Structure formats: structure tokens, C-alpha cells
Length: 294
Image 1 (cartoon, one colour):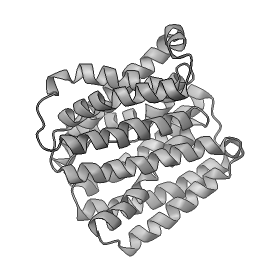
Image 2: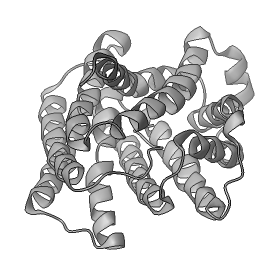
Image 3: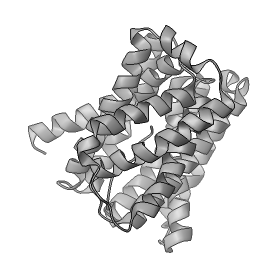
Image 4: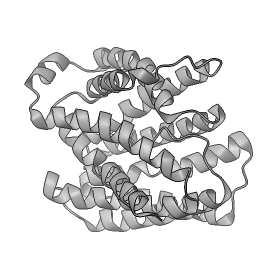
């Protein structure tokens, strides 16, 4: 791998690993669904030059905006508000076994025994993680994150059905369609949004800008370039370092503890996810990249 590509991959891992850690700072200051609405407004403004006519796929992109924007981000970041960012970063990885199951159901993709075993191991890891005292006290929040991971899995299937789509065009239109949905959900389910936004300090605004610019725009663009340059089997295993980095960063940044449940559940989950990812990476190449863990 060329040095510049290696540096790009390292930056992707840093961005994805810090995503929910920085997001946690944001949702402690701003209602989470409202925060995601503002995030998508910012993304839509920054990607406005990519708002080109999209032709027939527009119906599928509208549906994708519901799954990925309106539902996945609402569930994931509402859940994040109630549990540790490190645990949430691991739980989000369940989108991998979920997407493997959905691909089998939707496209008849063959499930190898390594993938089935990986699913069982990943869900066993999530069960161990669910037993942690800090999560057991906020079980609904953990389940919301898992539900968000399931919606992310559905979104990956929708993206696959779209075929080859420019990642910036896709993210621009998803942002445009998702922002109104998120604002509507926020005003139905949350309160004190404008007061919270006006009281937000530089850390909250920094979290918003980081998620919009670094996560949605920079990391997606870099990752799309890498998977079109190298085999997925060479890229994907390295990206599994991102949830590990999230756990490591959450200790000094958020003061989160590293517990036996977190380590054991995290190792099992990532082992299972790694097995699934590797099998799928060898067998397929994605047609577009527009999603990560948030």
C-alpha cells in the first residue's frame, strides 16, 4: 500500500473511532435527534455542489433517507445519550451480521459456515456486553443502539440495490431528504431544542462540525477511494480497529471505565464481525459507500 493510502486509512480509523466519542459530547448538550437534523443541514449546505439530477433512483434515495437518516440516526444517537460511547461503538458493529442475514434473505447470497459462526459469536458478544452493570441500568438505550445498527444494515442493502452512485451525490441528497424528517421527529419527541442549541459551547458545536465534515464527507470520500484501489480483504480488517480506538479514547475523553464485560463482549463481537467481514470482502465488492457507524 502506498504511503498516502496508508495515511488515508489511518485517518479513516481515527475519524470512525472518535465518531461516537465526540458524538457523546454533542448529545449531552443538544437533544440527539435535533442534533442530527442540524448535522444534515450542514452536510446539505457543504455538499450543495453535488445536488445534481439523479433520475430514476430518486425514489430509492428518498427511502434510504428514511432508513438511514430519519430512523438509524435517531435510534443510534438517542441510545448513545444513555450508554457509554465505547459500548455503543461495539454494539453498532452488529450491523455486519444483520446485513449478512438481510443479504441472504434479499439477494439469496450464500452464507458460508464462517459467516454463520461469526454471527453467533458477534451476538454472543453483544449478550455479554448487555450484561454489564452500566448497560443493564440503561438497557433501553443499548437496545436503541442495536436497533440503529439494524436500520444501518437495511440501509446497506438499499445502497447495494442502487448500484454505482457517487458517494458525495448520494450523501448530499440523503441529507436534503433526511433533515426535514429529523426536525419533525425532534419536535414530536424532544423539547428545549433551541434553548439547548443557544447554550451549546464550543465542544458541542465542534462535535456537530466533526460529524458533518469529518465523518460524513471526509471519511466516506477517502474510504470510497480506497476500496476502488485495493481489495476489500486488505482494507476491511484494518477498519475493525475503529471500535477498539473508540473504547481507548472514551477513557481519557469521557472518563468511561474499561470493564470485564466490555472487554469480553467487545472481543467476541469484533471476532464475529471480523469473520463475516472477511468472508464478504473476499467474495464481493460494494457498489457504493455511503454509510458507516454514524
